[in-house]
Image (cartoon, rainbow, N blue to C red; front, side, top):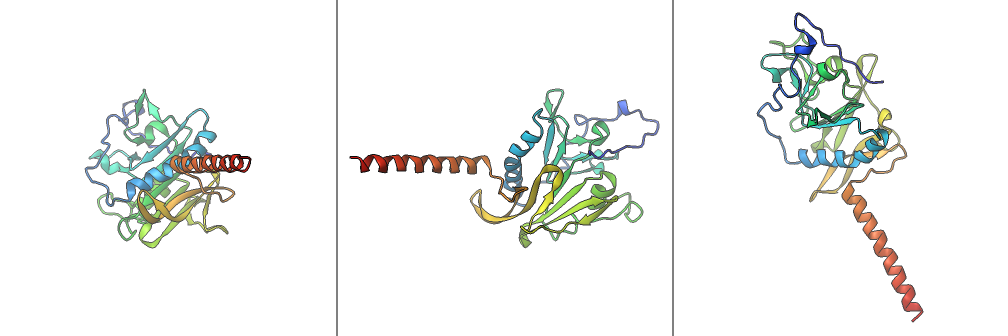
Length: 249
């Protein structure tokens, strides 16, 4: 079931609230380490066949280091969080034939099913659950926003330095830390997949990468990996045919 966010309205009509074309799509900062981009590409590329099967109408959205606007503030970007990766089911990937600049909850109402944060520091920013009553100047913690404001059912925090991922599941309006299954993965049941750490070589780097598996524990491959396997299959077939022809010569 999709999570619904109801944004309280005062004197301002919902029709006049800004949309994704009127809100900033960047806060002026840059990616904190060089692994974040290939990591995002990896989980996006490998999950696409699953999402295309689950959404044959193409109604889903993936955000990569994109803003999710959840409240109106001045400046506007203070009312947004920008997870490194997120997935929203049952919404169009484009609006008015244009790619989304950000994801604006008061125009959509459907919250992401999962957000994933890539830790660059010590993880305190990603795990900050400071509430409005605790924060100074209206500042709140990132984890509090995902849990209490946006109400994202699953939140993953990936730490490459520790070769680990921690996943929170929203249960009775509160995040609970999930336990891994027998394969050491976290089942994301609504997506029919599992999330975990894979030690391997990708984009010219041997690292503990965050990856998806299907519900049976099979690694979800990227397009390049699938192409390599297909090429190897063809080469084996050609070699068998060559040896067979030589045996009859």
